[in-house]
Length: 236
Image (cartoon, rainbow, N blue to C red; front, top):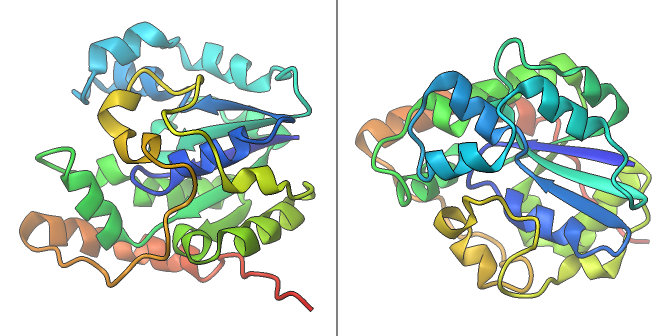
């Protein structure tokens, strides 16, 4: 099985990659289109030069990598929805189970703002994620539901995609994963210190000024996807 997990940044996406990566039957890929995205847009993200040097910048070559058999029964690909620019190939997604991981925009903006001084709508990718869902469909899961009950929601998600649940998904070694992207030192500090999912999130953070504008622009897209979010299967 090939699983393409689509999200924006600061969205539990790395923890989910570690969760699937803890399965002995699963290989993982970390944002394979990141260098192609940076090369095509010219955006100056942290560690830009190192990222571009670490991955193919031709989106067709990246798509070929996503089509290849992983060498294990399952392949889990962590993707950012906004990396898929117009003209980037998407035909390879037809052979994937597509999952869309969402998080409340206030939490995303507050977390992203701690790493970068300025934020644009394109950086957090809510419009891109909704547009991608409209194109390729798939399953929607809210990161808040996973953090509130990791065993229950991971069982539910695995059932929804036809993959047996493995309790190994609940824990991983501290210190990172061998397949982390080169950008991991800048972005993955909290996850590297973890050995499992953090607990349920508290109240929404308060955001003001330009950050509040980003939240306002993202909310309609989040709300539309949220209505489709997978609900936990209640145990009998």
